[in-house]
Length: 248
Image 1: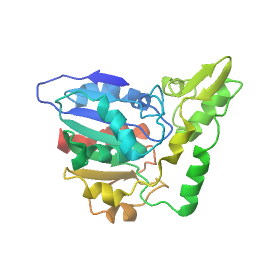
Image 2: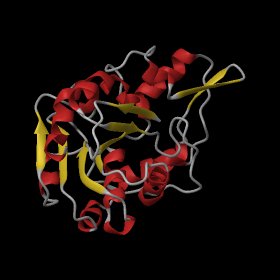
Image 3: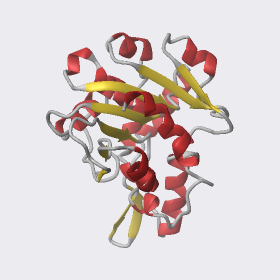
């Protein structure tokens, strides 16, 4: 877990940053200088279950991913959740009334809202594949960047990539548990109906995974980030951090 403290003041909300499928909490590491300037208080960037250093789950669900995060959260502190893709869905599960957590707002960026039967079948098939081993770090790094959607955005030598790899007996693999691909369809209408806190859904203008129209059908505020793609938080951290300004 990446954990930082800005100019802390009593009563400030904790910013909980949740990564997307295949990534780790380290994807937020380049945000540290920006958060020091722009977020007065603590921020946390944990690994979701089955990613990075977080142990796998016996079976993956959004509720299960949220429960793992909830168990590690500081007690008694108000939260603002900023989640990318899968992390955004987990943020909504954390904010559900039944979760009983002190979540004050959720901003989800790049959440895939509509899944076809073929897409769900493909994800299910990926979840059943055994771990792939690579002879070199370079091969594993290239695969990690593809799986996390970071190809062309992050250099293979960056610490973000190192956090997503494991070396065992001279071979390399992704840190991610492949079974996490089987988490299923998020069911956004039900998740949104289960929370009373402010929710903002955002997407990069060029994100191929979700459209403005699909998000607007969900009945919550929607923001479009000009010129950005699916990993808007990596492409333009300041633009994405600005989305949480109303919830400080």
